[in-house]
Image 1: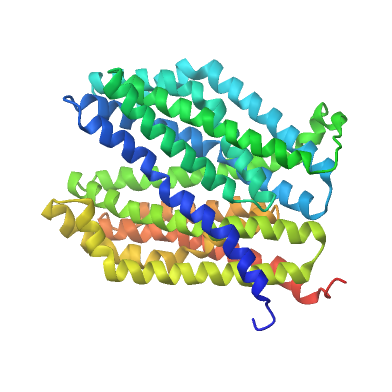
Image 2 (image 1 turned 180 degrees about the horizontal axis):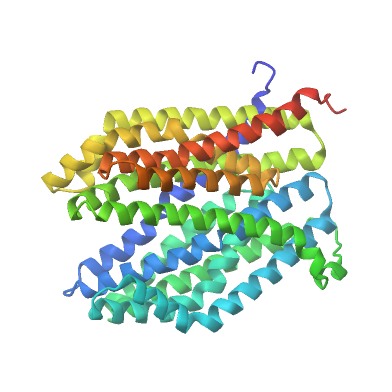
Length: 443
């Protein structure tokens, strides 16, 4: 550790803090919608938007594999100083994104109907959600390209773009919500339209920054690779692994909520409160993941195992420090946070009863968040997928074999993160560490 220069720590922190700040502010978008609709006379508008937003979240998370995959490819190409490869991979991912966007737009009437049918809400809330989604779906192109291109910028060692983009979207969305809902009386439609317009404005900013970035790179693009299906094999393999990983994680959360619902509405609500802590854990540790994927890919692209070793130390220790801080913070202030999130005594009591699981979770399973970044940068996405498969299997088996109560449910849910961390840490030690120890410092 004494040999790690101060510049390495500074570099890691400079990549981490914009992502952490952007992630911390993301929930404000939902809070703005809630605050605006919450002051209207009828709660059906808020219910409909909440219903529609939960379905749109699947689009965001479902296509997040584009961002992670492109980040790994970009960081390695950037490290290798191969501008032609970098441009080609960006073009390939853009074509894949266009194909997926076309499918979503073509199938959206059936997708919306299936999603609303699955949610099984009241007729009034379903009608508002239908209106909301019929507008929001036209923001899918901006949403997918924003997500994908932010992965490109992470690979280019620039995470501040994500902070600029989120900040712009929040400010514009706030103004449009107030104007469209209170000024024009558009209620649900106003919320949806405001979100769509803010997403396209954010995309405009991203495209401007992308144009400037590409101008600084050497020209070159292998157009032949854009038309050959075999040229997309690597992208498909990475994307398939990341998509399955995301699907299983979402399934794990859905299974947790489904089992929690069997213990009554109070337990379900208390679990929902505690899941906000998990969102905070994920959003915070995502900063170390972004710094890892950017710098690990860069070091591998340059063939610098000495630089890779330094990156693993700085990002790993930063992640460990964040894990300890969060566990300690939840132990000290977890009860206060619960009190701020609900004023119902029964929910406060239940949430406090299960709070120790959240206190332990950052230290027990937090390594997986950091290793996600390491594996993305190293393009070891199949092992990321396998780690989630292992963790999800542990959770599923425990939920079927252990007694049916909420403490055992939280134990099984924690196993999903612990198992994921254990698998990835084992792969990390077996594959990456030996290579680093054997390598000689590059000239």
